[in-house]
Length: 246
Image 1 (cartoon, rainbow, N blue to C red):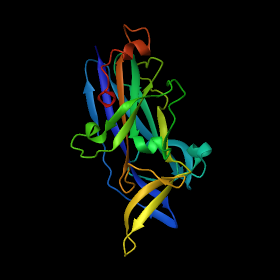
Image 2: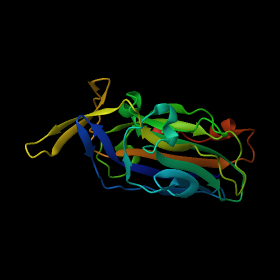
Image 3: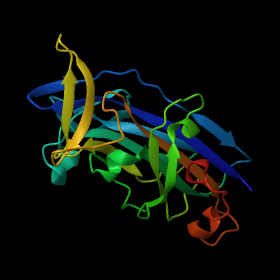
Image 4: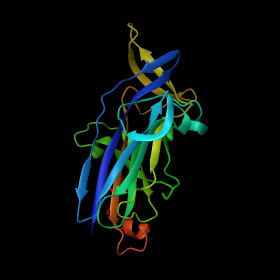
């Protein structure tokens, strides 16, 4: 059986709104890419963003750039068009010699999703089935050598149609944003330097995430040959559970 797995990560440098001012965090970014190939099933996970001209999004796409600055959007219902929205347009291309079925996993900090601080945009139309939460995993299980104990919620997205040779899926996700309701509680030392920070929602501290650290969003895509299977559900059921979902 011919399968493929591609893993990448998004690291966001966070700028969050603090009471009485703006607090900025600029952090190192990294990227994890692991590729496993058997036979002639080959996929490429493509990550892009819209170009910005004169402080406005355009329809032209460019390669995704890591180390983003993320601040709350002005309106949740118009998030994609908000200049505070951060693109992460993920598609999957079949670069092999056989038609294939595809699924993608997205891992995000669980406490930020549960508290409605962070939202993932997209993945519910254009051929992708509604995502299903399939478990949680600590970051140390995603990235070798990581000592982080941040817990991630893992969502699975299934592309319902077969992906023909040379074809590319519609975006599985299009970006991320901090919701308009999110706030920050910041502690400063005597010199005015921030010593700690926590997200706030409706006046309550979001416990379990240190807001001085980076926010990671990890993405992994899998593909399996189309030949011999009736549909995507049947084909993808032949995958052993992804390590993030075990």
